[in-house]
Length: 197
Image 1 (cartoon, rainbow, N blue to C red):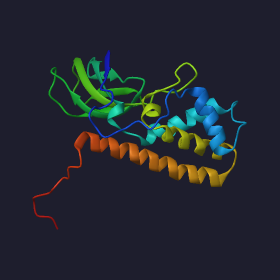
Image 2 (cartoon, rainbow, N blue to C red):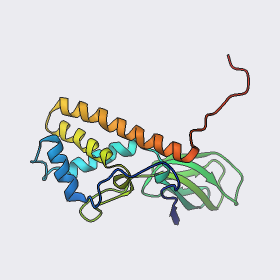
Image 3 (tube, rainbow, N blue to C red):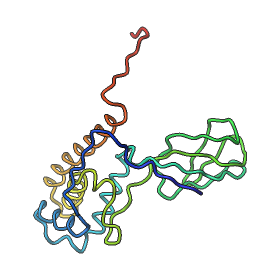
Image 4 (cartoon, rainbow, N blue to C red):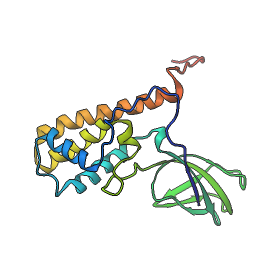
């Protein structure tokens, strides 16, 4: 299986908002100070996993687009471990357009053998002491800060903090996705030239 990540798009208006050299420990300290909870060190790995899980459900950007050649055997292949959602399929071995995804397996409606080139959205690389940074933290620090603040609010049973941070997180996610869309397409609009009701 060969995987290539398309990586960040270039030439777009996206400007990283992350302070330089922010690592795992820095994020822990910043979240503690931001939420007023400096007692979260023991549960921080759990809060981080929960925050990243929710981000993976909501965020779809060109930074996540990854291309993989899946070896199909009799129309069946195993999806990559970081697979979130398919974007496109191509193959020289067969002409078809229908697949079924069940769990971590993709099945063609008509069995065949060969490589299926798949472009998909990959999970955000999990942060840890061993992997202190990723593209999202480099792109927009606020997304992580607010996403973790939501989890701190839920963990500490502070509904006001959780609600306020959730609104800020969702706004930061929307900004990242809008900037990504603008970088891809500019500010072009789709115009329907046909009659509409």
